[in-house]
Image (cartoon, rainbow, N blue to C red; front, side):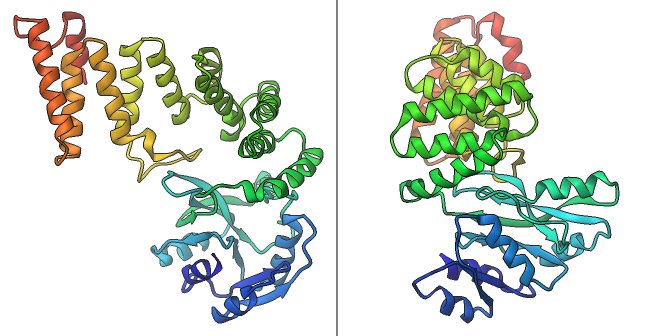
Length: 368
């Protein structure tokens, strides 16, 4: 992992600091080959301690932190440097893709080298409390920059990390029991271990925390989402939980997708078309939202769901329109050309006068 990470930093960083926490392979030799300054720090089950030690070794005015399983994309480095020159900026957010095939969200990765800014938390460590304190004084701001980071560490199974994360998350929760994200991740660890009932217990605890505190960040709907997926997988419709989640985060696109799937399961095809259609029109490659999403809930996947639901609703004109969109998006695929034509013929058969939609649907189709 490390070589590709350090290679991506060439030309971005004025200095590279690698803190080795006890490797037994060629990590140090490899890092030295990229000109990194190398320091050793005894691992003590505390990510913040290791990161804060690294900060103490830095000499530049800005710090970018990355992990070995992350890569900085090529981009306009001059624009990044220009953004960081803002006089009151204390931190900067980058575009961050948490795994391959996911959209980006804004992640705090640049920090001023300031003694008031240090990481907190043994796992899922963050500088956000310190940043918020500085911003609250009115003398500091947070900016966004054009740097993009790809994280590939979650692309495969995570079972080999489960025991370490279970131990660290238990400690983190003891220190900060009100952080919903920690309960969500602990549930995911147990899901990875195949202990679904235990996972659900932790997600339900996180859900109750979110209910009691009210929505504050995008993380507060994560336990909603996992419990919804669990109920749908068991054959339920999760309608009540979906409604609650949507009230928490009406702009969350995964909740929108899950609501559409629930409507489909309940036979409410026309309502599902509206949600799938809205998702189909989102450009996943350029989306930067509060949460990251699997790109497959957008674009052609959502368009196909919209087309199928419209057909099942008897809105053959709308189905033909969506199949036509898919046909143009994938011109080498005969399936959607055939389905478009079939939907058009069904419309003619159902309404011999020539209308491709039932009268109650015509205005909706035209406006779309």
